[in-house]
Image (cartoon, rainbow, N blue to C red; front, side, top):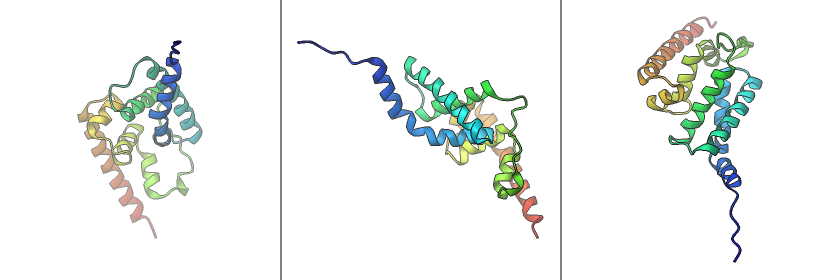
Length: 160
């Protein structure tokens, strides 16, 4: 009887498609939070998924798949971050106050609060994703929330 061996590349590719591609929309949203620009976010996601595919072929993720993928996204961002790493100021006047206040936060604060409050990651998971300590994450979340409260209370006081 002739045995046909499965192609390991196809097996990895199929597994990658089943396990990692379903997170694409969430990863894009996180990339958009980091960059503030849809085209730049798309480029970042393409870079991150290419890196993720290469890493996936070499070894299966040891952490949760989503944490692993976001760590790759952060690494890809560090590789393409422009000097200063700030989000381009784009027509913030037309945005709702919450979105405008978020855009005004530094990238580190904005991403920490996004990961915690939108994606629901724990402080430990955020520390793993960002490559920082849980104390740093806690501080960033505290500072981001204080800044948002201050900015939002100021923006509502200015309303007619």
